[in-house]
Length: 210
Image (cartoon, rainbow, N blue to C red):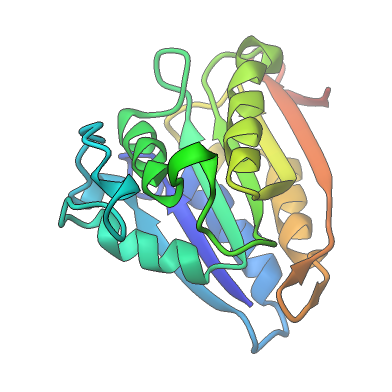
């Protein structure tokens, strides 16, 4: 199975990176048939979509930037892990550029050219302590991936986080590990579905599953 992990966070070793790595550690435990490609969008040159519609006439996007590498990886991947912090009410700008550029996989009349059967895991991190404050972002991502025939099999929404990734509660990381560990694969088929939302109450350092 081929896994493509995308981090939309500009911070190296931040909350998104730590949760992604924990999911991957769970997946890779005792397995030798999984190939992982992990990319941090902030270190890549990915322009915004120019709305030129050349991709509807040509074979793919005409912009020759780092998105060309990700197009190839998206074509090959069986599972996509997409992680972003919430910035100003939605995913980061680099993450939005990535989403916009996936327009190249959609021909006229909304015909999708990506191979079928791909799955996705969504990870969202936020400082706001109320998980439901940005629940619509997860819904937007689920609908976005669904429009490309990509089924979201798991989502983790982490609320009340700080800049200190080493203080992420163990319950959260344990769950992320289990998400990776419990992915049952036969060939390229992912058969695990679960959602996990948590909120940190910073004053008493409790974690609630909601």
